[in-house]
Image (cartoon, rainbow, N blue to C red; front, top):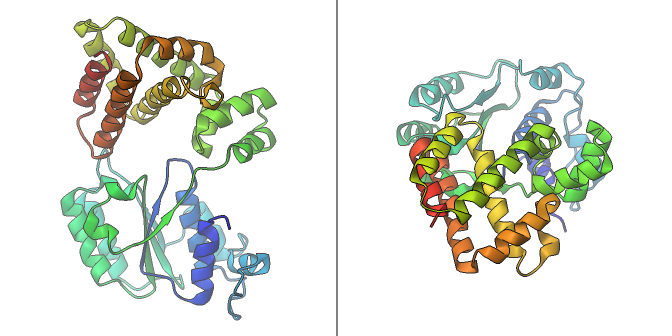
Length: 333
């Protein structure tokens, strides 16, 4: 049986066993926020029938009866972002600040204006500092009536343990490659070969697949790979490392993608030694093979660990410039 978070969410609605808080985890672009909005629509749709209990098998009819119609006034307001009882809290800069959580808690202390079930979505919950997390904890310990909080994060381990323990955890798996390929061809008009490459590079993320299908992403990937090839073959140029770290850290929004490019390049260099057919960056397989032959497995694994450590540190809001400087020096060893 394939795990489907939508089926589980709709099952909870029909059984009337919805918890007061969820944590949705998964890589960027797998539909966590979309699922949160679909849940809000399902809870408040004016046209679906929840009068009968869900069947033991949760069949397609159950699914259709529970999902929001997308046409009633409630669904339309949610889809347009104008429903007064469906809120979205996102990081302000690198953090979700205590003032944002206090404002949310005040709003949730009031009765819902229109909704049968008020839904408050907190995106990138790992961005909450301890003060903001403690303020939210009080709300989770004494949740208001007819209110559900949905926190989203990449990994459960990035969320404060006190919050994690009070949420129902739903994990969103990477999207299958063939489904992404079909989506790009049918919905985005991408050619078959380009869609195949983008689906491979996307690693299960719809949003990354769309970004990859644009030429600018491939160009940046190629530039970063060239820099990695140079760093790992000509160590010792400290001034060059610092200049590259400064360049990479200037655009903070790009850093997660840049680090993922580094991670997949190193991952491919390891995999290439054993199973070349499973590399992600298929279009530059020859260059990856050369890197794989030049760098030892222990060194590749050490560099891969350095990138993963940088990713984790940045999710914890570490200084981006310092993180990139340390990473590039470790990659040059």
